[in-house]
Length: 206
Image 1 (cartoon, rainbow, N blue to C red):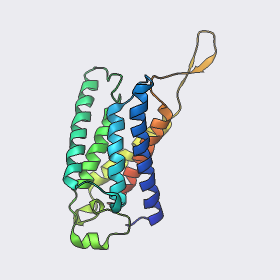
Image 2 (image 1 turned 90 degrees about the horizontal axis):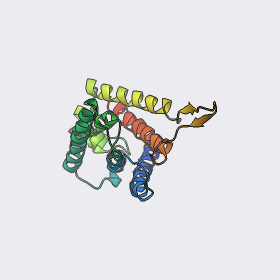
Image 3 (image 1 turned 60 degrees about the vertical axis):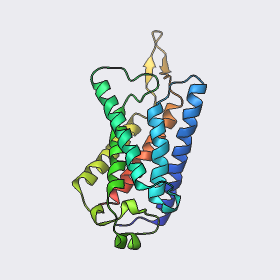
Image 4 (image 1 turned 135 degrees about the horizontal axis):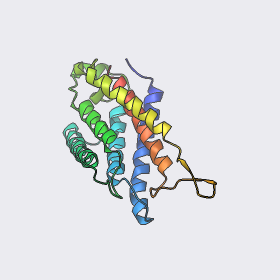
């Protein structure tokens, strides 16, 4: 199953935009004294660039073993943070309060980069699809389907929680609850874009 070239190009541009936006957030949030999910933002900077290279091989600038190491380390970090939050420890001002989705994202990246690609499959791959998405092992896999379903569910959860909840004050008026994070809706939109793109890439493996 191959996707249209225009969609591959569009998703590549979206991933580069997400990477650039999260890099900007990393620089702006501490400067403006706002809370920031530094671990999640940093991961999405690297993940956006890696996914752009997978979709458009001409943009790939790092070898597969390096990406595997980076995302394995990211998965270990978010796994540790998940255990911390499960034990009741606060995430802190600079850490992601919901590490599990990022743990799954890192695992999905390791999975996609670990797929062996054969020379024949690479030669016949559709334009715009990187070698990480080709090969004999890139057929149907229960793990591939499970990861894709998770991404769909994650995107739906993010969309459902996109609006900032309203709270009632003692005077009976309704105000919008504020958070200490910089532009939380924009951050959620970036996560949605990342989830949609990753889900598409996983579905392409089925």
